[in-house]
Amino acid sequence: MAGPCVFCDIVRAEVPAHVVHQDARVFAFLDHSPLLHGHTLVLLREHVDSLDDLSDEQTATLFAAVRRMSIAVQRGLGAEGSLVVTNTRVSQSVPHVHVHGVPRRKGDGLFSQKMLWRRLAYE
Image (tube, rainbow, N blue to C red; front, top):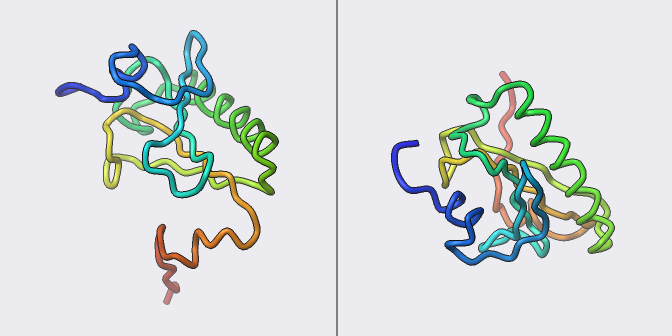
């Protein structure tokens, strides 16, 4: 890690966050600028810059937690599904690997608002 990491600060409770889950390896909190209500970030407590840098064991730990959080958030908020997304370096706003879990409902307007990405056709 090159410099300070706001997610490491959140894990150490040096920066406030709405924590929804924490255990010895994983930490999850509500996104401070959510796409939709319940948008949660899931990360390892240990600092790892990007998905590409994770070991197989870290990947298994992180994505098992992502699955559990996705199910819990859907049940807790009555969502019909979820969008699960991560970025690697480009478009990664914080250089600490994290996964976005966004509860979805039919008609929630997420894609119609052009918040995410446009679709292209293969030629």
